[in-house]
Image 1 (spheres, rainbow, N blue to C red):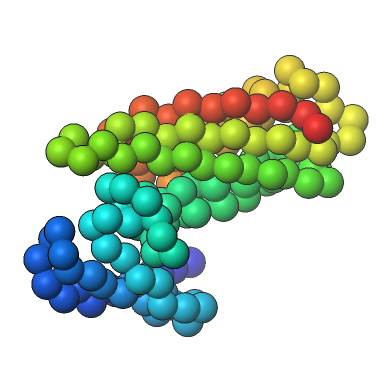
Image 2 (image 1 turned 30 degrees about the vertical axis):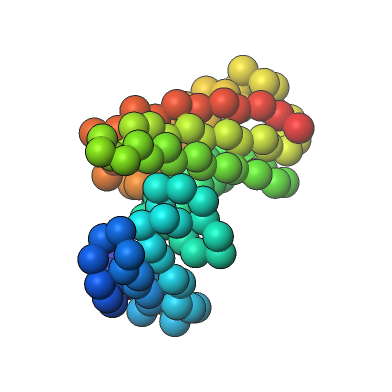
Length: 141
């Protein structure tokens, strides 16, 4: 069964001096302020499209990796995934780097790296971001 998730943003003002609020409608978990300075300079307590992409990618990748490991008979005890999305003003998103550290009983480093590479290639968010270079560092804890 397909699911559709929804969020919306209300923006006020011009790009450089304006501000907005992103609301996560489907979950109802919150409203998050956004602004150009929080995107192109320092976050200063506000989010950005890139941070939201990083959150989506790290969670999707973790789910895909967990499923792949469990399907191969090695369910993870813990996965810690970080996604770093690089934004260059005037150019756009220039890359995403995923870093994952896992605790997977009975699996060696090579098997973990192989499973992580597969999750990177096949998680739905990675597939949605195919126009962006995605790199990966994977290791066992």
